[in-house]
Image 1 (cartoon, rainbow, N blue to C red):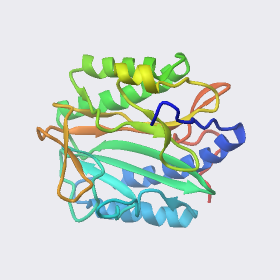
Image 2 (cartoon, helix red, strand yellow):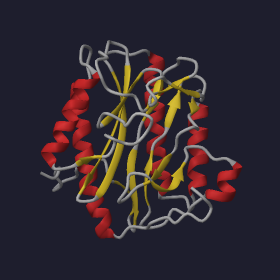
Image 3 (cartoon, helix red, strand yellow):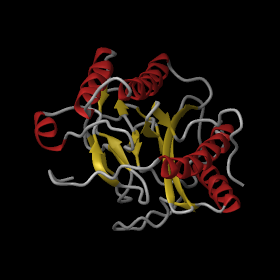
Image 4 (cartoon, one colour):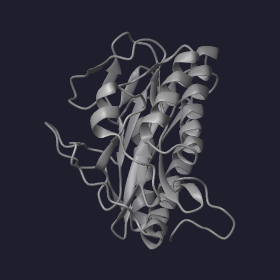
Amino acid sequence: MGVLAVVNLRSPREIALMRRAGLVVWGAHEIAAAMVRPGVSTGEIDAAVEAFFVQRGAVPLFKGVPGKVPFPAVCCISVNDEVVHGIPGPRILVEGDIVSIDTGCSLAGWCGDSARTHPVGTVSSGARGLLDCTSGVLELAIELMGKRNRWSDVATEMATYVRDRGFSVVENFVGHGIGKKMHEDPQVPNFCSPSFRRNYDFELETGLVIAVEPMVNMGSKKVRALADHWTQSTVDGQPSAHFEHTIAITSQGPEVLTRAPSDGESVPA
C-alpha cells in the first residue's frame, strides 16, 4: 500500500452482505474442524470445504490465485512449521501436529476470509501455549478496535502481547482490507514499525472492514519459501500458528463477520 492508497468504507447494507459471505466461511471452518484428527489427509479436508462452497453457491477465493504455479486448492493448509500458504494433498495428520486452515469465499460479489489453527489429538504444552497466544492476540485486536483510534496503536499492543508470552510475530505477511476483492487496502500488520506509523497508518472508523490475521512463531519470526512456490515455513523448524477474522467497524463497535451465527442467523443456503 502506498501513502495515497484509498481505503473503502462500507455501508451497513454492504457489511450485511459481507456477513453472509462470512457465515459461509464460518460454516466451511466448522466442517474442516470436525475432520481434524490423526489419519485424515489435508487433501480430504480441502475437498470437503470445496464441496461445501459449491453447495452454498460460493466462489472460493484461493483456488487459481496467480503465481509461478496457480494455487491449486480452496484452502491453505499448513502443518507444524509451515506458517501459511501450505498446499493440501496426501499428507496425513498425526497425533501432536498443529494444522492451520485458511480459507475464504465470495458470495454475491462480497468476500469473507478466516483462518484457524487446530491441535491434532493431544499436543505439547508448548504448542498449546502457541495456539492460545495466537487466538488470544486476535481477540485482543478485536477488542482494541473498539477502543483505539488508529491501527498503529492496536498493532503495537498486539506485538507486546505476543512478545510478553515468549513468541514472535511473523512480519513477512500481514492482514488486509477486504470487500469486493479479497485483498484491498489498507495493509494490516500485527506489529508497528516507525515507517508504518509515519506513512501507512489508518483510522479505525465506521465502515472499515479488514482481515486481521496474526501469524505467531514459537522461535524465530523469519520464514522461508519452500520448493512448491507457495508454502512458507519457519527458518528454524519451530511451529507456527495462524488465526484470522474478517472484522467490520460499525456504529455499535467491531463486528466479527466470520464468527458463529447469533440467534436468528443461519449460513446462507
